[in-house]
Length: 483
Image 1 (cartoon, helix red, strand yellow):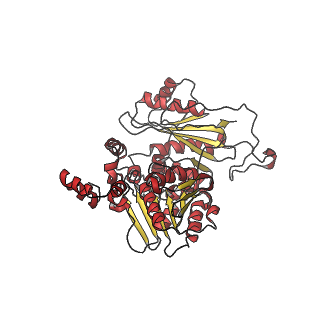
Image 2: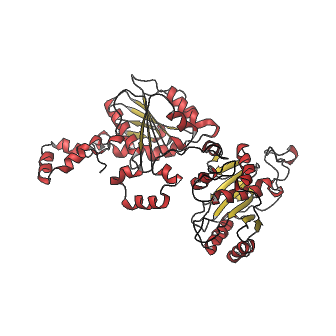
């Protein structure tokens, strides 16, 4: 049982004794019973005792982090009329949707008669006793420069956008503004990811750290959810991070690091692109490894974007070929690069059987995986590659490729990473991957090949909009056009 000792005691009573105990309460006390957080909360969801300044809840999905944060804010606001609380989320819309109006948000956990008034236009919550909370976006660090707070709740700090160091700037500005009251305090809740901000917080002095797993909140989660996600992810790196709340650190000597991938993160794919290449690493057999299928696109600025991971696990030849064809149709691929070491003619014939018009190019691996990957890793270091979103399984494999040729990532083989390497090699390291009028390094076009707006001048061609993906594992490209 994961319930706290107070609730366990109440439930341990015989029905008659429990009814007698509840009947001894007044009407007002019985009404308050449902809102009495310390009765229903697990011990790790309640603020720690003592004099502390920063409390970090680092736990898996479904642990109850948002509920713990909302209840802590409610307790602070109702006990201190002078409280001025900063509520910081990744984007402002998410802060409002999750921290304030969500199922476990502040409004939902507050008793009707003591519920704060929410003024969306002012981004402000005001309690009947005068306490206030204000919403901020971590993506706008300067909005935290100036305002003063007595308390702060930061949600999902590991997913704050750190482009240009924004995540660290937002945290620093917030901490410098925590100067009201006698004992300013900050609560941060997040699922772990090895990003610079989280590492810095874990290394700070005086931190109170609470760790937890998804199963800790089993009483409040559907059994099928826990069973299905544990069966799917198990003890994989993704499962250890998202379910067990482990911080997956970098491997010494890896070609890619978590911090490097975070620096290369983009919120979305480019609005226009010049060329699309899909890398395919076919499995040796239907009962063997996954089929790596990774979609990459070249932007107008010469920067490559990873836009989709359409890989499939243990597929038959027909299934992975259909997945490739679906990705090619969805993203209007200009080229499909497939490794042919596991039977070149067979690979091409399987792809042609799925779609006769597929623009297939077969490649043969003459070097080891790590040797092929090193030039692509250098493109990341040079800032010439972006990930349009988060691709956990692909990124776990990239972080398992070592410079010496060894692989220490999840699974037996880095199928997704290999597919990405083939695609990026074709897109960025081959002659076809260099935009017209652009030099190879850096990706800056000459003045004679720029439009009046400063963008690269491209050959005249009709605008095309990609179709919606037919394969369920392919991210929708959305409103992307190609020139």
